[in-house]
Image (tube, rainbow, N blue to C red):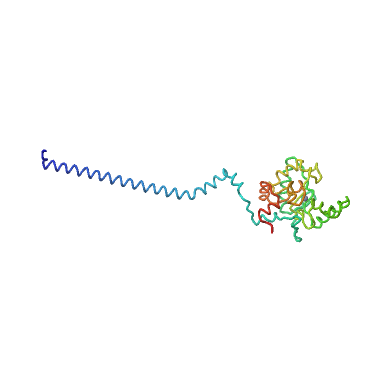
Length: 273
Ligand SMILES: [Zn+2]
């Protein structure tokens, strides 16, 4: 082995120093670049987390139409205090309060009045029917409690004349007329509608163009077919395809969707006092 000259050793040391320095610089550059990358990643992930907590709500609002179907179906009806005036219930168990006197408004040319608060939706419904070539006629609107009682007693007398006992006559009458002290017509929130070509309150009205249209569309104006087929046990009144009751658009739409009558709705919404 030949010994290296001192100059050669210096050169070798210098080369090593340069190489080490260069390697150190490379390591330092790598570490610094890596830590910067980490910082950027952390910042990006913070932004993402921050935006995630806000975006879904914004997106949910914007994308609501796409999700409206199932969301609406599942949505329970939320009743506000201002929805309640037209949801008042009267039937054989729930009389109309004796001091209940609605502000009335007369329906032009029909000789009938209704609670002034349902005048506009009722007129909208009638004029939309007329635009479609239908001929609805309001044959009964607001009735006083006295008139309701007079109609009931007259019906009972008619049955007695046919040979029924007083008790039987009473039972028969209450299936088709609200008993004295009750009655939706006394609220001013109900109307009986027949048509120009079918001027009688018989179940056949259901098969007229007017009867069919009303059953299908009355909810759009806030009305319900109050005494429907299959609900007789619950309402206490026989099927009346001509009797429409205002309950407000929100409740009418809900009742149409669920197929409930007002008594069932009262039970579901815990409205019974
Ligand atoms: Zn009626």
